[in-house]
Figure: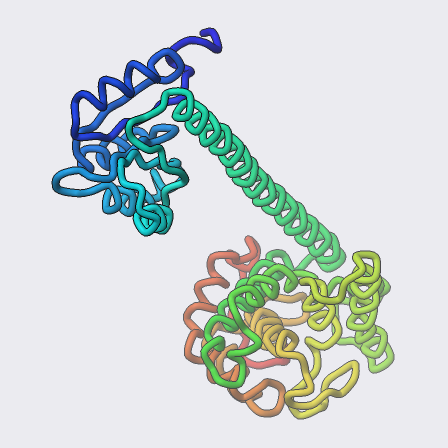
Length: 379
């Protein structure tokens, strides 16, 4: 198809109720443009909305809907709002011209029409439209490309986080789907709290998404704990437990180093760092590593504390059988105001069934087949 073929010519819609005027415009334009015609404003709006022309030549004085009303409708419709409108008029009143520009016209051509003047003004407006269309298309392309790259980066981030967390979990072969379960517990608990006045400002949708993304890194510091302690099939001695507690600060330091490399402390890594360092703090101040108390414990870490302990309780270990969901809920409630934020425990109780559903959905294969409830014991 050649560049001069009719199919590639710009389309001009001529709107005029006088047949002689339409015939004159067709004769003037048909060598350069594809010409469509309408004799009423309503017809012009319908034609343009079905297949938008490149430019509209619109008579001002028409029976029924006049040019001003027609132009308003065209500019109100997203399908035709970008189409330039040039008014055709025999009126020379400045107020009429001002009114035309107010409703969205880009120019006026006076009747009787001078072919050289009309062709020049039409060509000028079509050139401007072509430039605007290019910029609009370019902007849409760039926006789509940014969204695509953002999705791609997000997928890479998520995959990297899961891979790193899973690598840490391989050091402790009994945790299995622990990172997935705790990730979902944290999100559901945060959602349950986002309308609570205490947490409303800290748990918007974006923050909850970041918490979900960062939660798998809560035990990343375990990679620095010696196997003889991490994999010990029994209760740790006091000295061994002190070494085990270091996984919180090891995780914090590793994530802080990553933040420094990224040059920011406001990404999801902030929440990952808070969770890694403080998810073993307790509401009454008896936790570690810093003995933080109450609201001094970051919200992210308080959420993880509930999620982590619940999952530890319902999971089978070499030194204990799995607790039932009901027993795990009871133990969480018993820790209200001592181990856990009271408000978070109340929210947990309200959505405990959702925790149970997550536990079943991401159950460890061994746990699903062999776990038995324990009559008593420590998580």
